[in-house]
Image 1 (cartoon, helix red, strand yellow):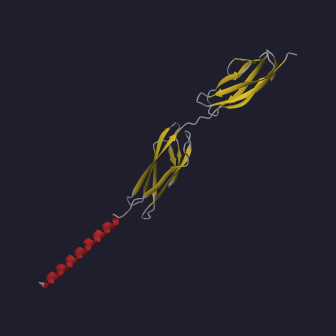
Image 2: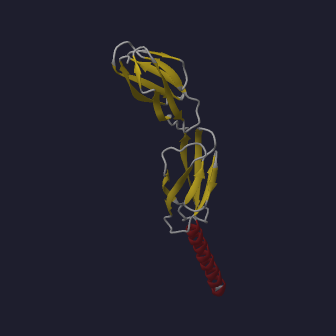
Image 3: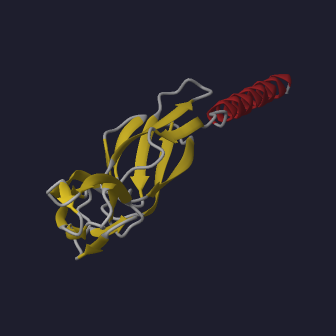
Length: 212
């Protein structure tokens, strides 16, 4: 009878040890801590359509686990892998989201999102030359004024001409200026606009002399 009780006690002790060991193993398995994302940033504040920027995710793992990075975007394309990738923006302006998921290989994960606005940047026109032919005229005579300009974005250009004295006739990049009947040096201003708030101005001086 004593032997039977002793055997039962040994069996019960083994069962308790097994249960405790199982609980310890289960506790260790559930102790994994997920990664922590410190920052998710792009190296450019803005980019043009079809532009390129680098996106970096800084993350760490409390348990020292090796981390993997899974990238996704609502538009454009992502090139590369790891914590730093290259994002190629879409061809059209808009607001797009870049998402990164960081995993530790033990069911621990963290997610962060970055929003980037793609704005088409307008560049103003460039005046290459502003000339008068002839550059000096007699009173009441005319001079042909030509403005040669271009636009970096290929926008269609319009020309606005102004002067304090004399008169301007015509439109576009070439106009005719008729000199006043008073001798002196007069200024003609050409303003070139691209229709998208981009414009540039330049001045030209013409001398008016007495009839010879």
